[in-house]
Amino acid sequence: MSMQQNCLFCKIAAGQIPAQILYQDDDVLAFADIHPQAPQHILIIPRQHMAASMADLTAADAPILAKIFTTAQHLAHERGIDEKGYRFVTNVGKYSGQSVFHLHFHLLGGAPLGLFGTPTNQ
Ligand code: AMP
Ligand code: ZN
Image (cartoon, rainbow, N blue to C red; front, side, top):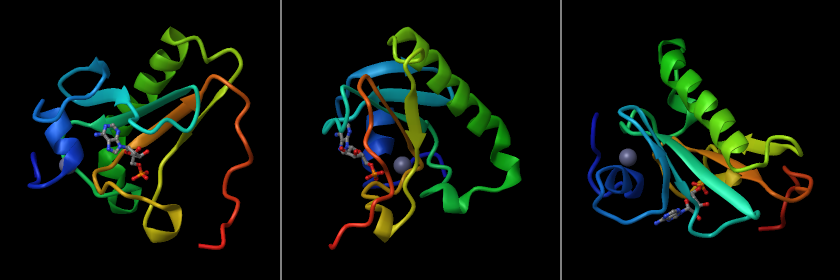
């Protein structure tokens, strides 16, 4: 379960693909999204390939999820987006537009964010 072949985020976690890493420890990694959707757009992932998306999580995963959420809090503060507010979201499956199947959360901020969840015609 530690590293899945051909997983982009496993490769970033292993240092095999470069990324602008903003925080890392033994459990979690945070890096800049390569196609930012807001002035600040950070991805936070578990280092281990523990789930393709939140749909695979169970209550036993609570400790790593708590760590991911507190990492988001710290980064939001460090990068100065906590006072005005931010969004922390995760995509699941086709209709969400999920494109990388290694659990990850998007931290978005730095400007007023549009209404999310608006259906498209695609
Ligand atoms: P999702 O659509 O929720 O699966 O999110 C995947 C995110 O990964 C997208 O926002 C992409 O812009 C981002 N992404 C893809 N490749 C890279 C990369 N090499 N480095 C950083 N972010 C990436
Ligand atoms: Zn992976």
